[in-house]
Image (cartoon, rainbow, N blue to C red; front, side, top):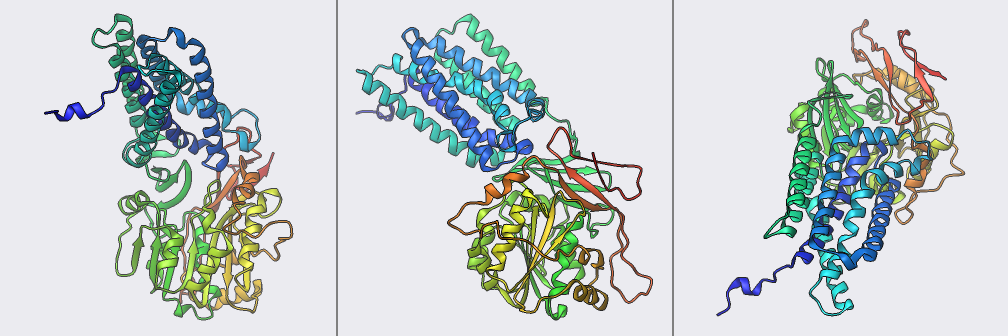
Length: 558
């Protein structure tokens, strides 16, 4: 009787090598997106560069490996795996320096990530490219066709395993350093396996030293502090790199290295980022603010907007956040707690709108990044779904990152035009007086009558909505030109092209330093704040600088 092991195919050393090379190459490719995103973003241009460089490096490795395949041996393959593992160790140790250095190369923004990807991932992928022709040469299959087909199949199966394992298991569970260490150890173990049963002295010593390098590189990461401040939490989520860091009394959530939410640890209800104050605009646009009973936030982050609504208003707040790790971080580090008044849903925003039975008096769309915008949350079809979920007097607020004019304004103006296809009235408010990339707040209503800035100022004076929005009303944009931008639709993926002019430009966030919000009955109660500008600037030579001697810093052109 045949035992179970008799039914299980046993891989030869050559087959094992080509399988592991597939696992490692695709695993590193998925990991590359996470490594370069904090510096260069995760746009289609970044991912296109990653895929292109990996294919080019593998092709070159295939070519060179094929030329040398006649003298291929298991020991040659072992050295290739050791060399690849050594480069992974270098990558873990020096990735921040390499990213920073390559970012200074003067290239158009859409190509800016190419040097980093070539230097960081070209060599190890090139080494792995040798494995397939070597394995075909050493294969026990008869005939070139059978040998090459067998190698292609095993390599592809390995690539599938590497893709799914990295995507669904490793990235959600481990840090970049831990994943890199795991791949490095896998490569070293494979190298040793190729040398068994009698491993040679030099490859064994080489493998030993590479393991030391890998462990040292993985263990030598940040020791709890970065330029973002004191790191209190950091993880790789299914969607992005998430960091929570404290700087003074401010706790900030970073997504892919960019500021997303902030909380004053001494005064948690304060609006640290000024643009979140605009989320209260529905209370000026709605005919009767007392009738705003249910509000939806699409995009949670640190939940600073929703939690302020809960404290300020007698309204039920639903928050839809696609990233479960963001929700966990908000609950753990931003004191967010689900309650009768706050409902948290871990879903895609558009799917939630399609499936929910609720209608809303206000919807706040806060799911965009500067370099990564979910196309499905920008289109005319999506805005129609939003319109269907809004009550007759409902108000939509969309937090768009763009410039108010010039080439970098294309996304804001296209979104404005798209919303105009669905809503009778669309309004725009800038959050900074400088003509730079910033948060621009779009407000859409179902009301056919247009409100002027004067109307909004009067409502702000008359209504007790818990916050003085006079400064925000003062940023009213009178008109928005849309003749040269498209309407965004589901079947037209033009968002990345619209974001392209913003790549590499300075992103300005206006930040309030102190605040006492109210439109209360007290005659002396006012809304006072000192605003400063916080910038996220990937460029080595900034277009603007700040004068720290001023009480209220403003942008000073070079």
